[in-house]
Each structure stands twice: as structure tokens, then as C-alpha cells.
Length: 106
Image (cartoon, rainbow, N blue to C red; front, side, top):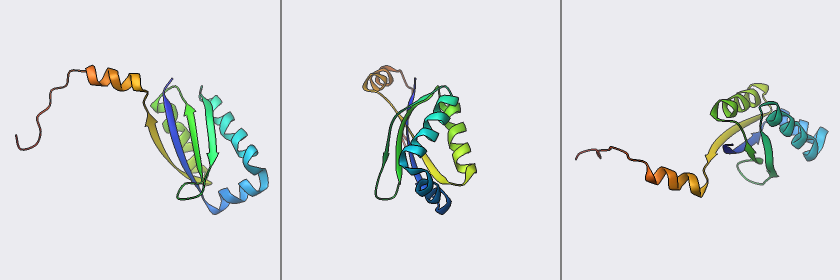
């Protein structure tokens, strides 16, 4: 199953939710959301800095990932950024692909 890194930054309303529910309460909500899409949370970390939360999640694919991001953003509690994660084996497979390409100006 594809793996994604979701970086989230809470809005003021989102921070109020964390204060009300605590970190484990929010993790449970994120786990339920991932499971509703056929996925699972591998790990969730809170952090200092630009992003407040980092979630590593397995999801069925990009459509499920987009659905998750849309739902979270539309709810207004957080802004998300999603990174597709690839295994070493997937990179090996990509390296073996035949690609026709001409660099600009050549």
C-alpha cells in the first residue's frame, strides 16, 4: 500500500481542539479517518516548527490521499501538505524504467 507523509499546521480552531481532546484524542480521530479510507496510521508525531504534526500513513492510493487532504482542509482545523513516500525497491524499479527524454536546448 502506498505510504504518505502528511504535514499539518493547526489553525486557531484546530489548536483549541487539541487543547480540548489532547494529543491522543486527535490521533484517534486521524486513525479513524485513515481506516475509513482503507488505510492505517503508521506513526503520528507532534513537533515544534513550521508543522505541528507529522503523520506517516498507508493509504490505498492518491485518490484516498486527496480525499483525506480535502476533508481536513475543508474542516478548517488544519492546513496539510502531503508527500508521497517511496521505498528503496520502488526507486530501483523506477531506475529500470526506459524513459525517452531530451534536455532543454539539446
